[in-house]
Length: 303
Image (cartoon, rainbow, N blue to C red; front, side, top):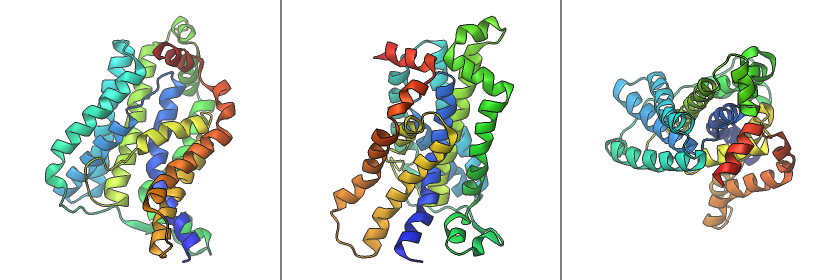
């Protein structure tokens, strides 16, 4: 496998870490709530998954714990924003700081421990396809699940009554209320579900990608996930593309180092974020007109 294929292969796996919280943020923002605490949700999910995986020896029990860890942080954000009418941006940032501190303290005993990682599964037949097979079909199960999750979320948002109510809540919650629905419950459910998906992203990082735990291991991935949603103009397929762009950029830094190419370390560290910024500028300009009306009002009030 040459360096280009290696970057793409590793980029798909790394991009999945971004894809889950980005899809979760998409759901929350479609309901009119932005969650800058996605970073905290990922941290909680990563630590929960690693701790339970290390204790039980089961990576899948760890993933379930990661879902719960992310959902707990999301529930706190939903309660503060929806029930207590707190500022959305401030609430997310506060919960990120809180999660960062708690995971640093609670995770201290797990820094040197090992965990049974999610097994890599080669899809019979598909993994043998030249070039495409190794890139897309030699990963762990969470990567394969994400392949199906993107069209599923797109279908649910645009082809089901639940999706209609969710999108209407993000646009005109008063209309939803008149129709006999409770927009507050819709928003809380969307935020918690999105945070649970971020928890899966954290689990993918700790028990699927690096197979260990260390402080602040998400390294800004949650904020990139929020930016990817803007780049994608709230469309699931573009969310996937944006997440993979970041994953490939992240992998490229490691591949360059592995092949002995002399590049400044700070440039390598900044490369994924630079690619994301370029994508935001190039493809996100038209996204503002597609933003849910309720989200735009909330952010205007926050500023």
